Length: 302
Image 1 (tube, rainbow, N blue to C red):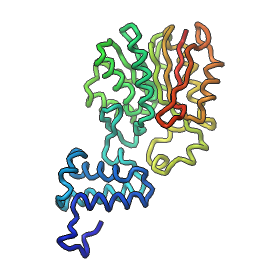
Image 2 (cartoon, rainbow, N blue to C red; image 1 turned 180 degrees about the vertical axis):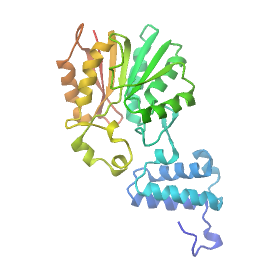
Image 3 (cartoon, rainbow, N blue to C red; image 1 turned 60 degrees about the horizontal axis):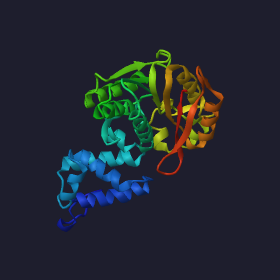
Image 4 (cartoon, one colour; image 1 turned 90 degrees about the vertical axis):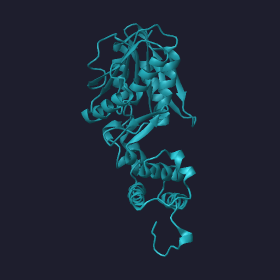
């Protein structure tokens, strides 16, 4: 993306810069090169992405070009777009992110939809725990959805990482749910009283050491390993989560958690071998994501 040798008919318009960048990012392995280019340019220009479409023929000022070039260089080296622009959309809401927390992903939205379906059939007030909260996207989204449905609920956002909780705190303030969401630094559910939760939600670390070594470099080099890797099998933390949730849920309370599709059967096995104080888990089932992969498992304490 150099101006050398260009003529007036070859001005670096927004459209031309986007086209060049799309091809450049494709060569560097981006699976969403055009979207990446547009998001980065909108960030450099301090506008909404949709605003670019009405400005394709404009030639941006040099300071915008310089910012954009730097962002493109970093993206081509593997840095995720969400970290470059400092935010990511989740369930149609914007969330602040940085390298202290995982980037929210579409697959995790299945936790939200499954929880909402059950909240509609529940009697309030509800107490909901989000374990391994990271950016706080699950806790905050559920708090706002309960508010939208006029369901009284208190949400607890739990994470072991103080750096992740600092990002979650910023997102609480961004979405103005400080009065509905409490943040706790703790190891899984250790700080929660027995039989105190109606719902326990979690996107825990579930990548095995072997899987981690094969992940894309943009994940391995930038996202926090402690939020991804569970151990040699990938289900070590899920095992602990299930054992603790059996005690922390109220009778008829729900556990909803995300996992690797590779370990869906193992998650069902963990639940089948686990006992709650009121008997075996009931209503156990697995939910597939939009790619048809077993992504979320649900269980109810009887």
